[in-house]
Length: 297
Image 1 (cartoon, one colour):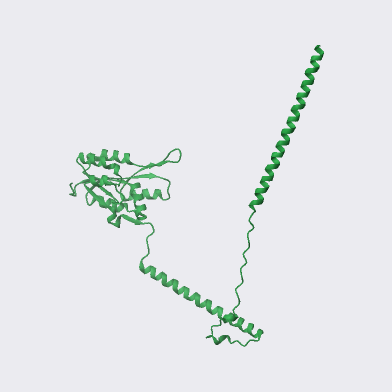
Image 2: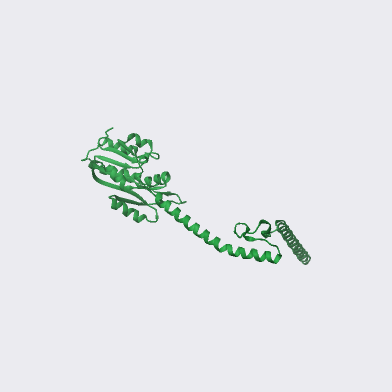
C-alpha cells in the first residue's frame, strides 16, 4: 500500500459524526475533538471538501454543535431521525456518504473516511480502483477489521488522547490541595467554636445537679473537661417505634367470601321468582286454551 503523503495532494474528508460520537462516549465517556481530526486528516495537504454528516435528534445544544462544526471548516449535512410505527428509530448516512464520495472521487487524490463502520469496505475498494488513495481514521477498538485491512493508511484514534474532549475535566492537584486545606481549616474553626460554647453549659448543669443531690463531686477533677462521669451520665431515652397498623388480609378475604355468598343467594332468589312467573304464565295459557275448546264444542 502507498503510505506516501505529498503536500499537493487534493484531500476530501468525510466524517460519520454519529459513529464517532457513540464510540467516544462508550469507550471514554468523552466528546470528539473534530478540530484535531480535520487537522490530522490534512497533514499539510490541500483540502477540497470536508463534509460532516449529522442526524437531527432534538438534543440540547444541537444547533451550537452544528455551528461549531461549520466554524472548524466542515460542511454540515443534516438529516432528520426517522421514527417508524412501533417506536423503531433509524438514522444513518451510509448511502449518503457513499454517494458523495463517488461524486467527488474524480476531483480528489485522497479520500479520508472518518468512521469505523465495516460496511464501507466496498466503497473504499472502488475508490482505490478509481486511482484515489483511501485513508481511514477511527477508534481502533470499535473499528471493523474489514476497513482496517483495505485502507492505505489507518489512523488509530485510541493511541492519542488529543482526539478527545473530557465531559467532566478533572481539577489539577494544586486546586485539589487548596480546596482540601480550606475545608480542613473551616472544620477546625467550627469544631473549636462548638466546644467553647458547650463547656460552660455542661459545667453549670453538672454543679447544679450534684449540689441538689448533696454529692461532693468535683467537675474539674478530670482535667477541667466539664464532662460527666460515666456513673452520672443520663441513660439515653428509648425511642418507641410506632407500630404501623397493617390491614388484616384475612378479614378482607372473609368479607369478600360473604359478599359473594350473598350475591349468589340473590341470584338464586331471582331465578326462583322467574321460574314461578313462567309457571303462572303457562297455567294461564292452558286455561285460555281449555276455554277456547269448550266454546267450540
